[in-house]
Image (cartoon, rainbow over all chains, first blue to last red; front, side, top):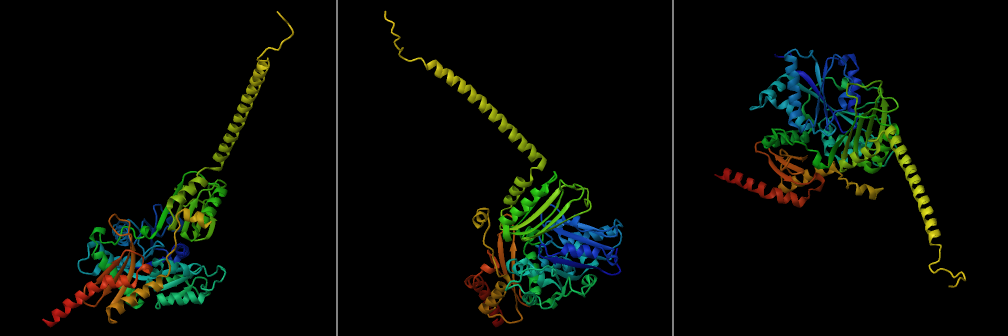
Length: 410
Length: 106
C-alpha cells in the first residue's frame, strides 16, 4: 500500500514533568485532532501514561515501555512500521497524523534518525517503509519554566531536547514561584535562545496561544537548527553504525548508569490517604532534588471507584481524582524516577508506610494491644503466684534456723 | 536531614552542561587547530549492558569528507578536562593528519 502523501509525524518531547501529557490531552480533546495516532513511550517497567492520556474512539494509541532512544524492541521505527502494517491490513481506521510523546529522558537524536534515515543506501526494509510513508513534521519541546534552569544545568538530555525543537512551549507560566536571582523569565529565555536560537518560543498561558498551530505539520530541517544538531545526528549515526552489538540502536539503556532509576511500585490493595501522604512527604524529605518525577494512579480506601492521580515534579506535588478507573487495571501503580538515589530506599519506604492497609493496621494494633493485655495479665498472674509462693516461702522460712529455746529443758 | 539523606544514598549533583559542552568544543578546536567547516560534536551516553562503560562522554570531529574522529571518556561531560582531551585526541588526530600529508606529497 502506498499513501498519497506521507503521514506527518510530530515529536512531543520535554523533560520529566514538563507537561507533555497535559498538552497532548488538551490537543486530543479537540475535534480537529481526531484521526490522530499517538505513540506514547514511558520510562520504567510499568506504564501509567497511557491511562492518563484520554484517547477517544477515533484515535489510536500505541504504548511502549523502556526508552524510545535506547531499546530496540520499543524503538520509534518499529512502532511506526507496526502502525503502517495495521493500516495496510485495515486493522485500524485511517489516521491523518502521528504524535510521538517521548519519555522525559529521551535523547531526540536517535529518534529523529530512526524516522528520517530510511532513505540512505543500505537501510533495511522497515527503515525504508517508515521513511517512505511517514515524514517528520515538527519537534515540540515542553519546558517547565519553574524547573528549567536547574534541569538544563543538571541533565544533558534536557539540553538536547531543547536544541532539537523547532518549537518550544513554555509551560506552568501561570504558577507563581518565588523569584530567584538566577531564574528570571528573561534569563530563561536567554538560556533557551543560546541553546537553540532557531526555535520559536510560545507561552502555554499566553493570550495568543493556539495549541492546534503548535502541532500543525511543517518542514523540519535539522540543518536550520544549527551545527550542534547536525553534529549530534551525524555522531549518533556514526555510533550506531559502529555498534552492531546493540542492534543498530545505541545503548540498551543510557540512563541507569547516569544515576537515573525508575522504580515501579504496584499495590493490589487499596491505600489509605494518610499513608499515601506520609509516603510522599517522607520521599520528598529523603530524596529532595534527587526525585525527578513521581506519577501514579492510586486506589484509595475512602473512594475506591475514583482513583487518585498524583504527579510530582521534583519537590512540587499535585493531585486530582478521576471519575472512574480508566482501564480494567485497578491496581495502584506509582512510578518514581530518581537521580542518584537508591531505588530500594523508595521501595522500602512505600512498603513500610503504605504496604499495610489501615484496616490491617488497626487489626495489628488491636492484636498488639490484646497481646500486651494478655502479657500483662500473665505477668500479673506470675507475680501473684510468685508473691504467694514468696510469702509462703517466707512463712515457711519464718521458722528460725536455730529453734529458739522455749525454755523447755530435757 | 542531610546526614540521613547521605546515608540513604544521595550524592552530589553534577552541574553546568550548557557551559561544559561549549568549553569542550572550544578546547578541542583550539587544541587541534580545526577550521570552521569542521564540526565538533559533544554528547553523553550511558549504558547498563554488561561490558559497556557506564557514563561516557563522546567527542567527535566531523569533517566534510573524513570518517569521524571519535574520542571517548568514561566520565560525564562536565568532568572531562583539557589534559584528557589532549591525551585522547593528539596521538590519533596528529597521526591521521600526518598520513594525509604523506598522501598529498606522494
